[in-house]
Image (cartoon, rainbow, N blue to C red; front, side, top):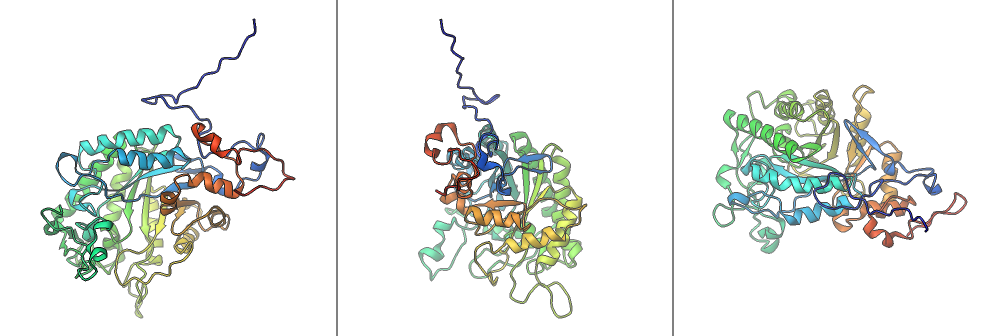
Length: 441
């Protein structure tokens, strides 16, 4: 009688349903002992420790609004099976971290009536399955929390009447059938993003600010209990935290306006409360707009701050690091329709580079770059030249959910693939020694 080794299709431990075990997880570079072409591994596929978590590679999924939640009733702001499939596709194909879209801590903080929220237990319940699936794929489940401020009560992009009927030029989701809340849009000051096409906000009162702080605390607790391993504060793109930071949108004369110290006060207070609630075993991240791209610059000829820019961002990041932020993701713009952006490949990367190089050895944390990073060699060059530590991608993931595997093939790296899809990656999973050139596919 011949003894055959037992062959078992092992399952992911502790998963609520059967998932084939993939070790190491998808997107992880395989050992150079077995795959000689991995002997000189690109930084993009080297693991990185970020605070208490470890990324298996340096490619993460940026938060991307899908405008696909119910707008009212008990299911308002609740993620759906669409979001599970949408986010799960990235996690299953090797993303090191998969972040849920910008999620509002209050109903009036949604960009549109169909955005994600986390002010109720029902919303938290919808996140549990998504976080659980992301985790079973070996990706880190994460969520971005924020409030849209003066850019809320607007339409989903495909409903924007300025694209359907250009002469109307309106982004507003009105009260009633459109599900908006134009009577409850709030901001640091009563200054609209655009007088003609966006809602007119009211200036936040002390009670509004207190309610906002409590809402962030409640949302952080819900996110933690639902299984998020990283929670990110959204301080970018002209939304509420960014609009407090910028003198273009913050005209307050109290402790939250005027000086740089005052304009930073509310975001830093919220960060501090988040760090106190996020367990030490989990990460606290922050996304910023490093510049308003204001045509007149960041300072006037007297040296006074007139817009938000890279020099203030450096100071803000240093203060955030003191409070325990583990990573800063550097984006830009979104706070004024007069912004003048020089768009091109990697156009926002210089902001990440400047912030990264402004940090002392004691302050150093990983810095992430985003913005028209479209291929593996470009991403690797950003890391190799010390411009950033992590690459954050959004539209490229929408175009190619298997972006991690595609960039691995571009760079000649052998990474593990989903066992269910391995037959589609036979060209990558071919051994060769260092004398043979890496084939690009």
